Image (tube, rainbow, N blue to C red; front, side, top):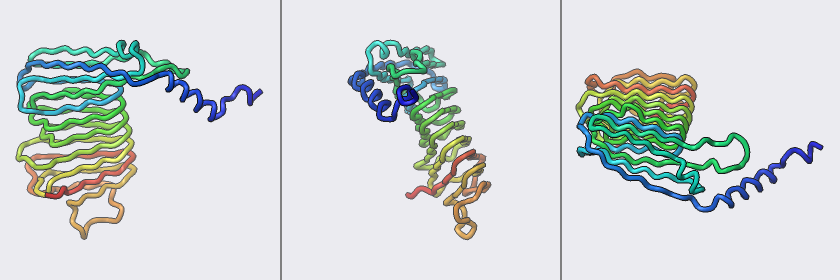
Length: 260
């Protein structure tokens, strides 16, 4: 009786392949919108599966491109993108149809966002449950970004950064350094963090891992320990009220001095 009831791995694989075969090609639908905004406008965006890419630019408007993907036209149509736009505030919410907990029915559906906005704007919320999240080129306003599972990138952001990852990886990088007051606060629960800074960068570094190692190229060679340490608290260059705090629970942190 056990053999007749329990599915073998081969049987499960066959069912999965059959289900994918029925799904057919991936269907896409693209939405593009432009909204004039104030220089200090705020942006809030929420998504479940896919990606969010936010780029700061020298512009006076917010440009939103959203690409929906699914295996079935019906399910593609059910994914709703709700945008509320005012001169001082842009809000984007993504709604997905409910996913069945059991069976092999179609549970597909992702949305990839590309957003260009004035770099002086504030990102009050950029929340993504699963996928890839990028914030690049922001200056001035605060940036708050949270990723449940996947990879988060912060690139050349001279804003007050507050970024968080549940499971995955985090990369924080600067190609150059600017003499302006800002801060970085980054936390990851499960996964590794890499941070890249130019040689002339100046900041107060606090990097700590509960169950992992911390290593930095900015630590004097004679003071480096094989495999890293659990915490680094040091001044790099002539720090001018710039704090960089990196925290990990289960994972390692690597701070690299980027080449010229």
